[in-house]
Length: 215
Image 1 (cartoon, helix red, strand yellow):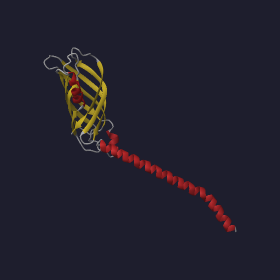
Image 2 (tube, helix red, strand yellow):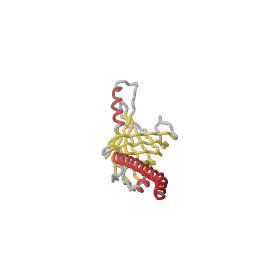
Image 3 (cartoon, helix red, strand yellow):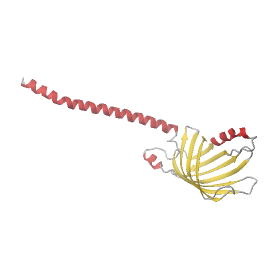
Image 4 (cartoon, rainbow, N blue to C red):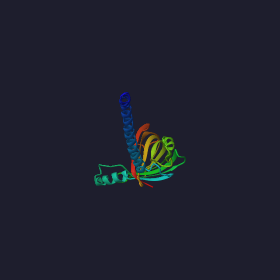
């Protein structure tokens, strides 16, 4: 009888400990499932933006400008309206180090009657968040990252002796989209050095977005 009583007391005292162990095991399993699901989503995102791709140079052709320009052609016969768009915007970027690159580009702006001006820009980009990527074992030789950039933009108006030269300081975000796409957006300030007669001198706010093909 004494042995049965001791066994019964032991079972009663052990049940809470067993229940606690089962709760810990269940919670741990749920955490592992959440972690696995997050890792799968992160892998999918990295695949879309080609985060682990080894690439040191990129040619980018913006498609937003040409699309907007084509939409403005419907007003070609209306001389009172001039829709100025970046009809052509092409750039070339190459890595110097994993975090630094230089970029050069050209733009052609036109309205529905004539070419308004031609531009050539060049500068440097610093991809400041690449060290964190390297610590995670990811490639630093790609162009899907956030950056700080400074560049000089020079423009001229065909057939007119008018030039424009400005220096820009911007913060931007660039991402690759699958194999052939990219998006590049930036905001910042521009300081005119030489100005068109109809352009306001001093500091100006600027913003830009490109969406197109890259190879």
